[in-house]
Image (cartoon, rainbow, N blue to C red; front, top):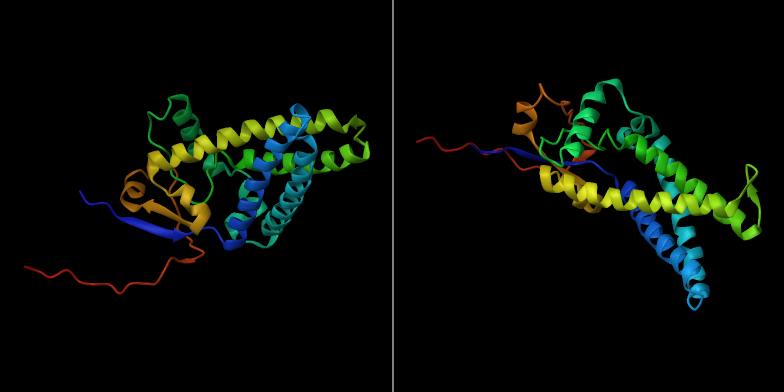
Amino acid sequence: MSQNFKRILIWSGWFRLSHLFIGLSTLALLSTGSLIQHSPVLAQHAANIHHYAAGLLMAGLCIRISLMFFGQPHERLSYLLPKARELRTMLGMLRFYALLGKTKLPNWYAQNPFWKPIYLAVYLLLIGLLISGVLLIEGGFLLGWPAMPLHQFASDALLIFSLLHIVAVVWHDYKAGGSDVSAMINGVRTFNIENNEASNNRSQAIKFTPMAEFGHKQSAKKQPTK
C-alpha cells in the first residue's frame, strides 16, 4: 500500500532564528555556569562567555516574544494555550510516554499540544533566569528573595527541560517521521496524509494551513493508462 506524504512550510525564518539563539545560548549558559561554580581556574573565562551567551538569549527571547504577537497564527501566544479539542491528543501523548512508545503517536500540526504549556513555562523560566542573573551581578533581590537561589533553581529546571526536550524531539521524529528535527533548520514538516485520514477517529485531525508552499509547485502529471 503506497503512502502519500505532504511537506509543509511551518516555521518562519524568524522563528527558527529565535530557536537557534535560545538553544545555543541555553547550552552555553548551562555549561559556563557549571564552570563558574565548579572550576576556579576557568571561572573568569567562563564568566565572559556566560555574559555574551546571556545577550544572545535576550536577543532570541525578544524575537520570540515579538512573534507571539505579530507572527504566524501557530507562532503566537494564544497557540501555546491548550484548547479543549486538544485534550485527546494530550492524553494520547501521555499514554505514548507511559507505555514507552508502544502506542501510536498522535497527530499535531505545528507544536505538540502536550508540550505547549511546558514551552510557555520555559519562556517564563528563561525570562526569570535573565532577571535573576542581572540582579545577581548587582547583588539585588527578586520579590524579596536573594537572586542566587532563584538563578540556581531556574538553571537546574532548564537543564532538566533541555535534556527531556532533546530526547522527546528525536523520539517523536523517529516514531512518526515528521521531520521535527530538520524542521527547525529548513522550516518544513512532513505529514503522512494516509495515516492522518485513517486515524481521524482516534486522534486529532490536522488542518493544513501552510505558511507558504514548500519549494516550487510541480505541475500535475497524469499516469498513462494501459
